[in-house]
Image (cartoon, rainbow, N blue to C red; front, side, top):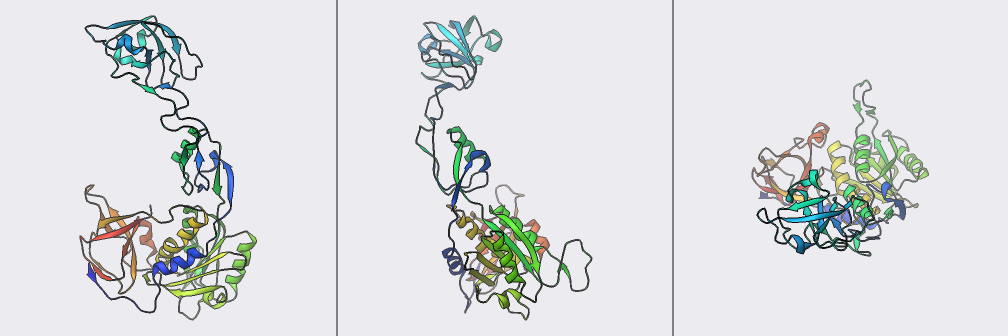
Length: 416
């Protein structure tokens, strides 16, 4: 990669993001059943209400035995035991196991207190088919306690199972349930309004007159908001004249919106409706990034966060990723509000804008499983919405680099 000049008169991405996050006030927590918490952010640590496992239990289908009775068992010198009990999963029985006795036991069943090892069916002469009456053990358990899962070996009552700030998915909620927890404290779901601006916008599928284009940004931004854990309470568009943005904010706040995201109307043109009508509520900034240089941000007296993003689809997507998504996760109290970043070699060369951090939508070429590569997905134009559908990540190229050559190792921010 070749160093290039830095820009002048622009704020850095980190500076603008810091200003955004400084205005975020974390939403109040609510208690919900574990079954309703998927996709929410945990606000209070989950502690085990029961031991995991709850009791000593069998890790195998087979026989609970006294280890001393089978410690020397072999095909040449097998151990013959009498089966005195049958223990399916869920049983409450705890039968005594005497010398040269065994209990047939299934995986997950409580281990009798007298048993000190489990012999799997496959280590006996008859297996399951001949598992009552007498059994012949052909192979000794490896150690005392073999195939016994001990009570509390994973966690004991009071141990922290999940830390605050984690995203609750299937694995996390299963862990909470296994720990005997039925309710968790999570953040309230943030409510978002998405408003596109532009007199040229018409609904997708509508006949297009000269100068008109299908409106796609509300679909883009509403989807990104939902993926960030938000509820979209309003979607709409306003023309390039009039007081549409201000009315949209009023409508959004009436619906309890925490965030309003505008796309378009924030640049330097003659018909920038967000900039023209909301100058008293938002600050408009030029950020040292490409795409996405023009940005607007503010907060209403009621506390609603206002974002003004560029109107070109790639610019809007990148701006949401870099500024809006972290704010939505901060609202929810997420411990880690940043995407994962990996280093990959560039699959081909491209130029970058002088003095600005570049966020280039890329695909990941996995044709060589030992050598993934990042390949541009959109051709570099901020208006090329079609290529966004191929993007799996953003290549993030620092502002002091003006050329990426094939094979250069670059940071890649994963988004899927």
